[in-house]
Image (cartoon, rainbow, N blue to C red; front, side):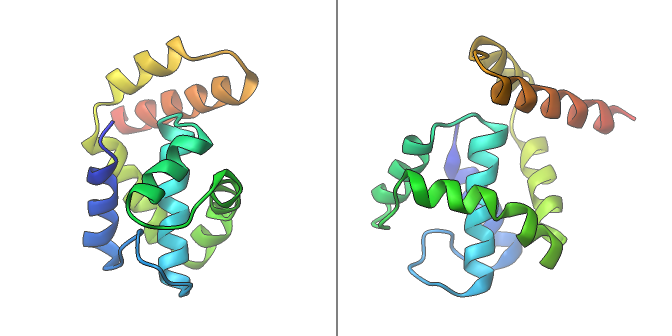
Length: 127
């Protein structure tokens, strides 16, 4: 999975860098979107998401990722573009490969729910 594609799409649309060291609301919201996509749509572990940030020089840990993912719904209420960007990113990636990998990784209810969400998304795109 190429996280750079996701980060670049967010940067191109929102004009903010998710790896920037800032506490400004637009950047926090963009980070929330980035973490949410990686965690919920691509099933990355909390530690692997934190490692992506660390590789870019940002001080991030699994608790920060959890907080960011949990704030996604609140961020969406403030900026409707976030969900549009998420949908665009999911279209740009290969959903069938994501689906196959997610089926292989099902071992708890959260992962099953994530798979269900991806299937619902693909069905909506076909309508």
